[in-house]
Image 1 (tube, rainbow, N blue to C red):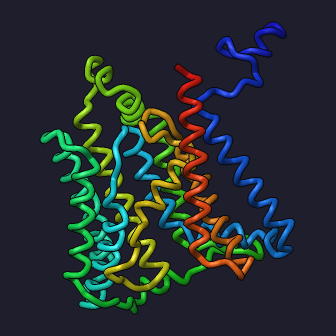
Image 2 (image 1 turned 90 degrees about the vertical axis):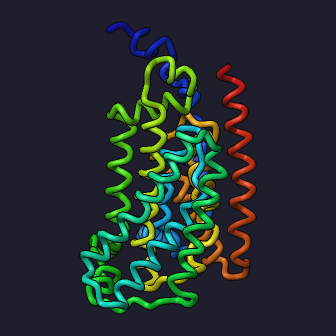
Length: 330
């Protein structure tokens, strides 16, 4: 192999970054800069447990964001995820209060999201209705079901649930929760599906150009239904992890989570128009949101609303970056 071939790969100099990877690298740089600022301003910020706490506090959001990544990669959107998370937590809490075995409760809770996601995917495909409208209806339905189950918070006192929620997995002097391991497992499975399976290739193809995907004979309808089912499953898992985190279910829990999820996916470099993005980018996007919250907590003088303000500013920047990258690739 010659020096020239070593210096270039696929006709591109080794130092040139593929256009679709630019937003992800920008997110990584932003995350490193934010962490460096935190370390320089607060000595305790360099503690490894601070990083682990970001994962612990955002494990449920990470799982939901993974499901949203599948949907956005196809060019769709799912506004129901926050309400499905809340409904899953409410169903789990109410069934545990009624004395059902935890294993049965887990099974029922895990079925809620995929069933609703499958139904919404079918409506979107067979009736050719915009995902925004269909998932908005799903959001109202799930949130209404939360209030129908109980108008007040339902505490969880089941032994299995509390032990799972409070169990610590020690890594030296530091620790993580079971929710973190579950979230990382979901990330690993999702990354593998998108990178190495036919479903993953179909997702990218449909997001890139749906008409071309149809002409190539790809199962567009089946793939769309599948990604909304996956999003529902991730929302159900996220709801269970949130019930571990709060040990309760409440009708107004996870309000606005769908917006945080979309923000994490977009900041992570996934194009809103679909066809480009990575699960790793979504992980970085969730970490960016978590580090912002941690920095505000360490400061102690700023309102929690500053989190929303900073996230809004970052969204503007990353949407503009996506637009610029899109123009350059045409």
